[in-house]
Length: 244
Ligand code: APR
Image (cartoon, rainbow, N blue to C red; front, side, top):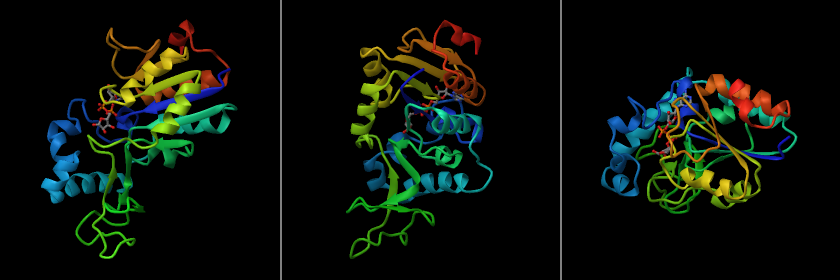
């Protein structure tokens, strides 16, 4: 049985919960220019546009019909029943892993349900949409909260803890990510260097450049529960994986 598992999740794990991904057909980046809504320069240029982008995603997340799906719940079950060490590193800013019950979780790209003081970097639970009156309570004068989201050109969060976990894991699983954005896209390479097993779960069949040893092609909500069952039953990921 494995001793130390790291799971990396991307927008694809939340797709079946009704949240749009970025690069699939009808993805968020088909409607918005990254440089306008996901960079510090875009925020400086047009605060209102960026606030509208994140407020609409925040309202969707809190509107009541966006729920964790079977993949989120399976990972929470893995955390509850797996006797070894587990860390979920998510690129997602939604709160579906938490709402499924996961606690050993790290949001490397920040969290939609928090705002951040631009001066102190203190974070605040978002109780109302971003706007000119939604300010920090840590500064005088109070500063307008910005999204607690890591934009392109900014340093992802928790990298020391992530590399520590990657350096010691014996199984690395990536679920629902296109592997296009670094540093997350490079995690598999660093894990391969120390001989851990690597598994990718994705809707699409991998291309020939993929660095994962094993691929499970299918919807995360169908595949991840079976993968978790196999891990908890003590199966070592191998050629029988396709039998899942
Ligand atoms: N089950 C499994 N995989 C899925 C599903 C599903 N139901 N639906 C989509 N996918 C896969 C797609 O095939 C794609 O490979 O999820 C992936 C989503 O890729 P992206 O939209 O690029 O999302 P992600 O990889 O999380 O993006 C990484 O880019 O824009 C930045 O900060 C943003 O965190 C994001 C980062």
